[in-house]
Image (cartoon, rainbow over all chains, first blue to last red; front, side, top):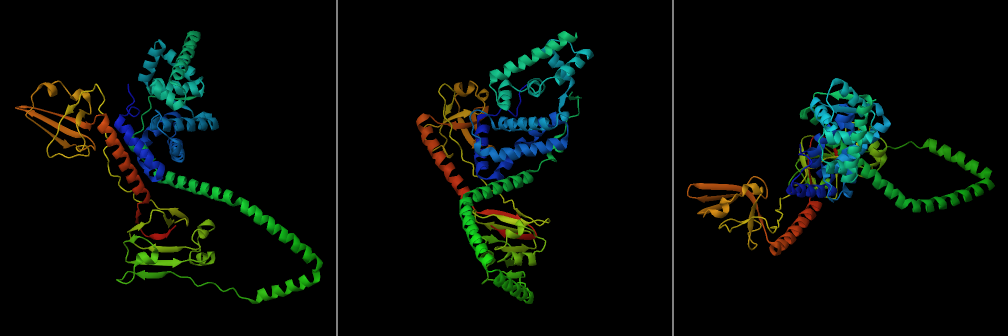
Length: 189
Length: 314
């Protein structure tokens, strides 16, 4: 599955860069970018905080910080969307440092099924419980990697851009996390 | 332990859009940038104030020393001055709204120092002190009083359009008695077609169209490439076409190219591409035009549509 919001044509990227340049000169011009990305950033945060109002506050904070720092954004291969996601990722982590109890994992049956395929385990009810337990025991960083890669189907390139690591590093971390989750099944089987 | 939501009903786009509030982010941003500017100003002038503070301290110390030598004399003087103060009644300045009506001889724009205002009648007041502000607008407090203590303030009764110079900003008094920036209508940005380079090894069709003019027809050897290369099948290169035409599509910079030969008719959406030498000329021209548009936007007047309220320009 391809994340359409992430993959942009060259023409779209060029047009967006023009909009960013104008937003640097006049904050009101940022409205175009806000309209374009509000929904996806909201969904990203809402999936993790499970509270619409908290998600909305965090989204506002993300765009406010983006506006303050847009002067520093230059296109060096990292798309503007990933730059926003990185701010959202950091805002979310700050929020969880303040209040860890709100951390939520959103998952549907299809995602569970395909994740079991990745783990090479069958998706029995007992295994489902083991998976939930294993996911809830992961560090915030590792959980975010699993969510982005397997539940949101993001590419390693995109994950790397959002979390600020290299693509290779993102791959290594994801597969080490998978190994860690697999060990849970071996122990609990 | 974390919470799990399995198969939760997804939130709709409509519901998400109810949480959109760009204006509040813009206000917060404006407030922060103003605060930062103030901090910078304070930092810049701090050396001056340190100097001034030092000088004042020295004067104060000398005064105390002098006063301590003339205790009796001073106490008499202070008693006298108290008596005098009690006798003087405070005279409040007279301040009221004035009305200016547009006539062939009276320009509202000149009176209010605006480029353009659509109203024919406006109430205004020119404040020259905080006291005057407090008398006419008693609900204003602190910084909001300071903000207009030496300013022209006007009020309008209906929806009006206002144009001011780019260097200024229009502020409105809110129901909570605070001055906030008013959003102006962004100026339209004209679309400039960015030239594209014909990459070696990619298929392209070279054509000259009589009667068709685009930004690139003035360049030599204009080629055309499809937006999606899948649209460019073999027929375009094997069929002897009788007729071909090009027209602008509804997407800026994209054209619809049509080819006809007898009953065969094919179309693709594409754009013009140029070879290296011509491309370099075109991109230079493009950058100059882009720069010129940005410069114009930077100095373009600001246009506002406002409804009933009290305003000032800073």
